[in-house]
Length: 300
Image 1 (cartoon, rainbow, N blue to C red):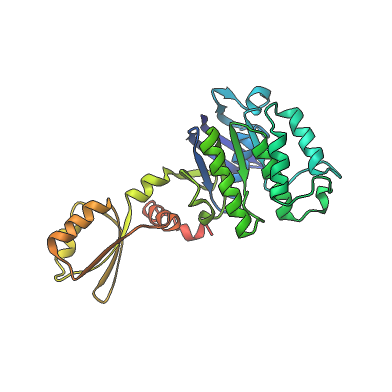
Image 2 (image 1 turned 60 degrees about the vertical axis):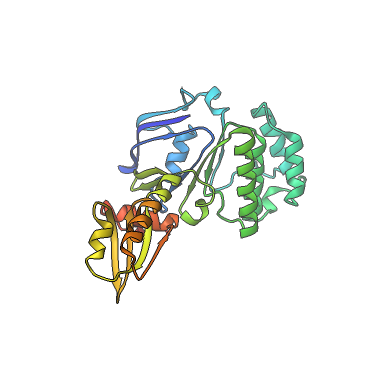
């Protein structure tokens, strides 16, 4: 388990991370979202022990991370800006990581390099941005660490490769209970892979919730009622996050479960009603508007 308790970090009097507290359970994919400059990369680097927090603590399996070799052997960090040794080939990086991570799977590395059609003997500095990202991901998977930290992992990958990487992550999680922390500015990239989402804004965690619970307890209802008073009958005692009306059609976002709202609709027999699930982006728009933020300015 990863425990972050009241962590803060400043650079030249700019608060990059501000009193962040999160807990990341094992075997989960934790999505850390926010715009560029929200503090995602700084927080990931603090989790990785690359930089020291000014305040607070970061523990992995109960161990402090900063300058702790034993703790750092538990995770692999894939940075946004790819770094490799000068003139190194994938084979060189493989040998390096085999010396760092005792459980590095050389056979799996060789197999994935063939699967991704990457030449182990070619210098990495001649690879495209997407190919470099693929090499980093392969190294990270084959390190066989308990945790993997990814900063904008899908940036630079084409749609087919993104799905391939997500499938590999899903397999690792299912087979060996790997835990992934993925930082991204794009909610759409995380929706089909994450179990838990944290929204970082101006260095602080604005929201942190299980994705399943979020989707289960908030819905969009489109309906046409026979009488205007039916609106109050159906939604009495239910928290309405947003309500729009165009002609006779109501579009209402409410915090409720699907069965409850469908049961209430059935009792009054509306002209038309439909209960729809929300996308991750729609959920965050609704949730953040409640606490006074315009999500459209926070995420892309």
